[in-house]
Length: 218
Ligand SMILES: Nc1ncnc2c1ncn2[C@@H]1O[C@H](COP(=O)(O)OP(=O)(O)OP(=O)(O)O)[C@@H](O)[C@H]1O
Ligand SMILES: [Mg+2]
Image 1 (tube, protein in one colour):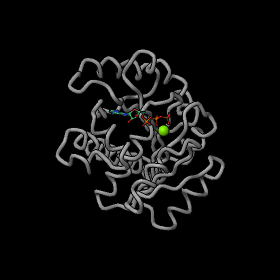
Image 2 (tube, protein in one colour; image 1 turned 45 degrees about the vertical axis):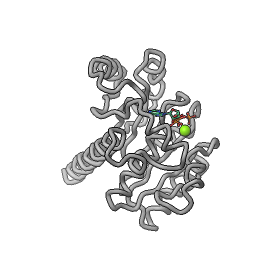
Image 3 (cartoon, protein in one colour; image 1 turned 90 degrees about the horizontal axis):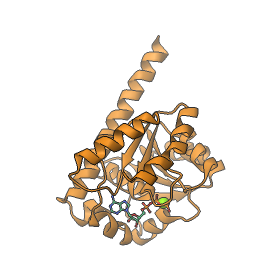
Image 4 (cartoon, helix red, strand yellow; image 1 turned 30 degrees about the vertical axis):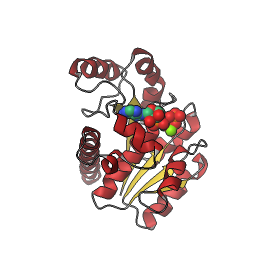
């Protein structure tokens, strides 16, 4: 089972959009995927309500109960769990990081947003969890922007993910309709970005698992 925490202290960074799309990509990949919504704003849960019973399922959980919920979901067969978290909530972010194998930090590639992720970077370093910054809602086809933003976040101690979720109307429209970009435009660029991001995430988790096995055997 894979558990991915999506955290960022900054509001509107793209946490929920990333969480929903990663879990939906796992469903498309034939896995039992679940989103645990720890945000009192309940945006992910609202999205699930619009979808009726279509997967991925979204369950809500107050941060103190998160570890137990993740364990329970695992026992019930969940294979890919994504934890969505609220902004400005250190304790919720901390609980999500502790429950996760891998942490993704969505961040818009703009000066103010980049500077604000230092707090989030420090948290994952403190808790010694593998983490990457995922750039969201930035311009498509702007390698220089991502290279510079990547160097900056690297200097804060958190490497950038080589794939982005660019600023695309499909992401805005899909979330607002209880859909995903893959459902809205299966051959679109937004859907491609999500699939790449999902595959990359799975590879990171595999690498981590092998590293941990190696450490256990040593
Ligand atoms: N890649 C993207 N392209 C276009 N719009 C995006 C993208 N990512 C997010 N958005 C839009 O930005 C807004 C904020 O996104 P989202 O709700 O995912 O952020 P959040 O970090 O979960 O916010 P909060 O901190 O309030 O929980 C939404 O309107 C969403 O549709
Ligand atoms: Mg959100």
